Image 1: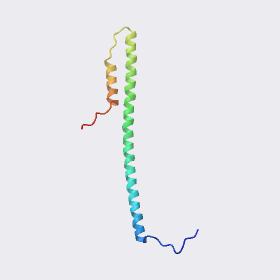
Image 2: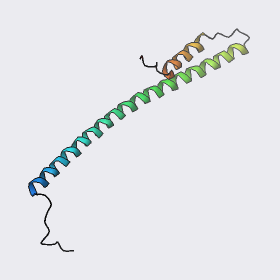
Image 3: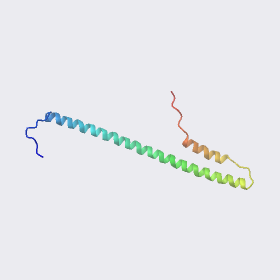
Length: 103
């Protein structure tokens, strides 16, 4: 492929360089925005990991309380639901939906 020696650029070199510089500025700005979103996503992932760990801990506590209640019932004792209610309340605090916004 050969270049046409009579080709005429539709803009001057200065206009072309200005346009390229503007393009680079726009690309860099988008890169900054993307990096910022990445930081937000990583922070959100940390929050989600903490919530998941809390849920797993609460489920383990509830499971242990259920086993304790089963043992109480098997022994003919009245079931004490206090610890189970506390474990469920802890789980509710983690998974409860947020309050609706005030309008």
